[in-house]
Length: 98
Image (cartoon, rainbow, N blue to C red; front, side, top):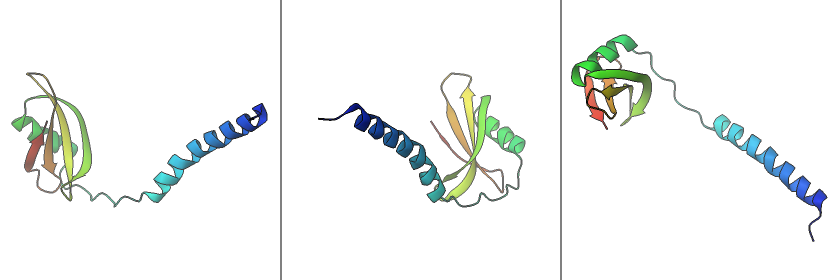
């Protein structure tokens, strides 16, 4: 039979593991350094809005298909959401994602 002391110990160990596991997972995950963009975030937004008119909701740098790009998230005038991929070096539009 499980005593309340054993249950308390179990829950403490479980809570400790939950706290430590994400920290160890983050510590082990080493991401490559993001290259310095040659174009500004504002230039990336402008290039993206030429392709997909609307309101920019976020701009982040992500690795897509082995290459770091600006991902400009746009809420188009017709509704929904589109991601426009912009080359960090040239400002060229590489594509869109729904």
